[in-house]
Length: 575
Image 1 (spheres, helix red, strand yellow):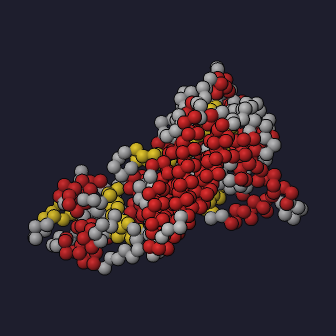
Image 2 (cartoon, rainbow, N blue to C red):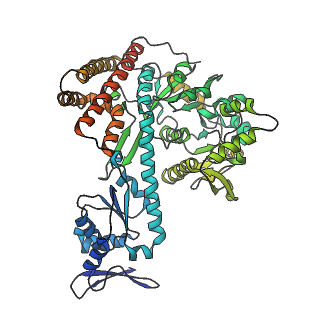
Image 3 (tube, helix red, strand yellow):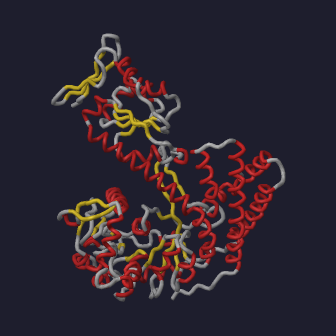
């Protein structure tokens, strides 16, 4: 039964009334157009890039906003899909060109393609009658919208900080594609095999002694942080996964013996990690898939990968929620594993600890301890510096200390567990509760799942051994062509001609074909800066020329080293 009644005003306009335990007029019973004009009259947007509207009604206020701020993107949230349907039928012109959402889950489709480089905030317009009926819904959507934009800005800042390093790491790691295995070749090879993700949360110590009994019953993927913890207990996972591009990630592998475990490394990871690992090596790429505003599935790759993929056979994508464990989740899905079991995934400071003892973090802290300054004190001092929050504990028994980042990952796992078609079991037995997962003890799972024949280790070994490797000829030619093009760019950017002419010549070179894909990560920061803080034409051109010349000077030696490595492959030791 409808809770909304459509009525006609004395002036011939349509208005809407909400009837439940009380009656609320969504618009004026006499002149809804004039009412909307008065409400919008005093609304300002400042420097905002988007107008977010709480409440659609019949859209009179939205039509006024469109007239007052022509060309400004408008996102309108409406709690009741029935209202949207009525508005589209009665006043379709009011919603033309407006993105209308009825759940927070639709935000990604709206904002994913927004150019965040020049983003200056959201102007929030509240349609009071709609808001009063469903206040909690609109507050929640606006909160999610702010969080989503914050996440997008955080992603952009991360790119600013790491993109150039990612590109150079990829070029230093690229030769491993032709001497190792590509993750795509593992996809679908473990249908129905349980998959375990071992993370390094404090609760891992509860289950360390049981993991040995799971090795023949499930495919076990350990995140890099947990690898040394497992080795100290003489346990060898099937796969160790690493993503980090930074130098400190090598510490997870110091003193680590492969012992039969394969290393799965993203192409952006710190090159000495892949180079020094003595065992099977599997290479992957990180990509993000999302539904665009037009409903199509879109893909966003790591910088440079769009160009590389034009010249090599497919590598295989793994999506990430920001941590190695989230990438391991997508890996197990792609391999066909079911169920997916989480171990050591505390996402909280269980017992006021940060990691399970045995990680390199704890090993580095031990020499700093004394009778008056123990590990507990070090952990406490670190926790105090974080933006902490209390979240429901595993098992629903009270609360546990978490923080903003942990809670983002918790949200990712909860959302993923809700969407995937395979069961997700949380066997951490500590830390934060992860909704939409089945909380079970690892001991109960050992009793439930039988020993597999052939074993997961045998299936993995057979798959890795059967892979035929591609020759690098196409990529070598593409890299040599790129070096020649970059030499032209560098020469053009340094030419002694008027700056305007130089800028025009360089832009033509940089924005053409492959060069645009190669140079993009290096120029994003400058373009973003100029979008947010416009300079005069001459200053803008001068800044871009300097960035282009600097990018060419960094890329040329990295590409040259990549070519040398491709032409002189190192023999792989599989341990």
